[in-house]
Image 1 (tube, rainbow, N blue to C red):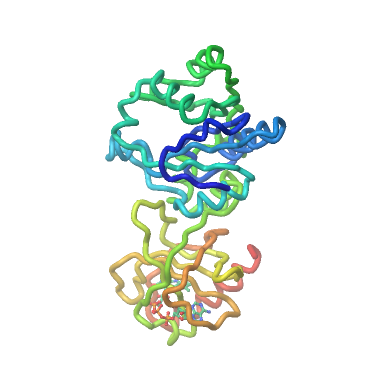
Image 2 (tube, protein in one colour):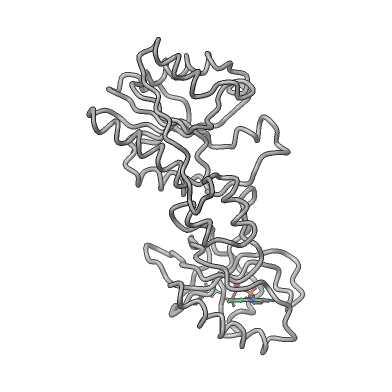
Length: 304
Ligand SMILES: Cc1cc2nc3c(=O)[nH]c(=O)nc-3n(C[C@H](O)[C@H](O)[C@H](O)COP(=O)(O)O)c2cc1C
Ligand SMILES: Nc1ncnc2c1ncn2[C@@H]1O[C@H](COP(=O)(O)OP(=O)(O)O)[C@@H](O)[C@H]1O
């Protein structure tokens, strides 16, 4: 997959099928839209393109209402590449975009991409104040010779799959349901930093990753997780919270990896959240916490 981080003219590619959207999380609905663009391009020996923004448009339009991200940019690029997309154009949404009228946005699409197919979700909006919609795109397509496909919204367990619902599920700790809507578990990645060096004394060393700013964070508590270091996935348990047993103040994300004993400081780890086991508790002391962690490990086994 070719990645562009600023607008580039690729209009000379043949039979471009382009998926448009913010695509935070690349959930089951987004997968259908992007998958359709990939399929349309393959059918015509053409080029599949995903055109998206690195920052949420609301971060410019109305920062107060800007939601936290479900997925970091690096993860997003990897997942989109894994779907067989030929070109990803992931560019900053800036004031210039904010001011584009719907027909100006369409002109931009034609100038840079000259698409044969455009695929968008049913609630896709574009242009100044989100005044553009799939119907307006369709009308433009009739004049400029591209067809517009709008796959139906995806339902999981009778709920409409949306980035908003997924953010709520993660923030409330229901990472299991979030994974169903995402089509894969929710992932957080980070570089391991040092903590209070207490974990090793408890018999449960925990690799700590910084709380990433602007990202959705699972509710405080203990989770069954999988942890990737190097190219290998390990089973483990994560604790999200402030370590009340030791009167901690700052929120941290820490993982104890099962059957593992290696130095992870300054290394990148990815934590994939499978299920929430319990909330974070203030124990009377280290012994009570250790006994509970032993029970957590037993309980987590059903999710591995
Ligand atoms: C599976 C697991 C469950 C945990 N549950 C709690 C908890 O309920 N309450 C709490 O105060 N700390 C909990 N912790 C966090 C420990 O307090 C923390 O790992 C320990 O203080 C080590 O911190 P350090 O990495 O800074 O050395 C848990 C840790 C793990 C691995
Ligand atoms: N099974 C394991 N799970 C997590 N970290 C481990 C494990 N084995 C060794 N480590 C190492 O130990 C460190 C955590 O030990 P800990 O005493 O909790 O220190 P800190 O407070 O600095 O996190 C990790 O950052 C990692 O480098």
